[in-house]
Image (cartoon, rainbow over all chains, first blue to last red):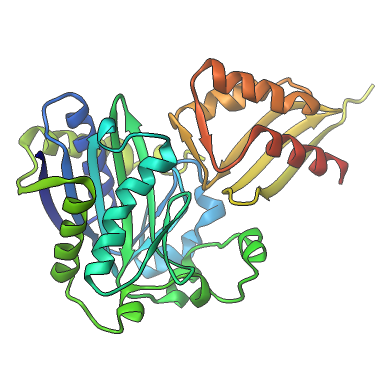
Length: 251
Length: 96
């Protein structure tokens, strides 16, 4: 059976989280680290923007500063995400474990979350290109990048939702709203607490997601640690890339 | 003779696609420079800079053809918008 290292790093900064994702991908690509699944949370709360987004167009930077919310550019595409009451996963696996087109590989990996939600009593579906929805409302956004023959996919699962705070930080494009003919944020986005009608602890959610990943990708998860080499690379990436104005204001 | 350039900005989203925000400097029907942003995906990501360069100097009516050829030649994949959609949106923005 395919084996995957399982790592948990809760309550880390946006810069730490993004730098570690890239460090693990780089070390897997170099053959020094095994395929890895990491679960993490963000402290302080943060907004991440997609690689191609313009930070000024997407985020109310003044308000982010007022709220003490960090802002970081991801190495993956996709949209802006407010990381507050949620759990994030990041998985690095060889491309051949999720073969087919890019959208097929999203679906294969997202199946882990759909299964995890099922174990928590929530009926969710994959919604192409990169979302997971419950009754048409988004509960999870996902994004992937590739290095050589390795995929990194990371994504979030909303545990609770403070729509007012979320949408006061994100500048939601009116085009999106118009297309979907949706009048309020609460109709577009949902969270686990609302769908399960129950408050789960973060470790209950992580356990369910671990089972989901194991089943969806037919892998065995082995609890492990970040290597010294990964940590060293993470430190360099955090300082020289993810904390810099040049990177975060790239577009 | 005075040369007139025009700055155009537009948001566009194809059905089932992602939001694309474009800002372009146009001289007559040609692109002097263009910047694309949005929540789409490009693999590899760094190819966005080469795509923007490839569109510099091209006629708006040739955007789809030039972009399609560039993607194929460099094995670049875009998810979230199409070359045809970008051309149509540019054409509609310059008409305004």
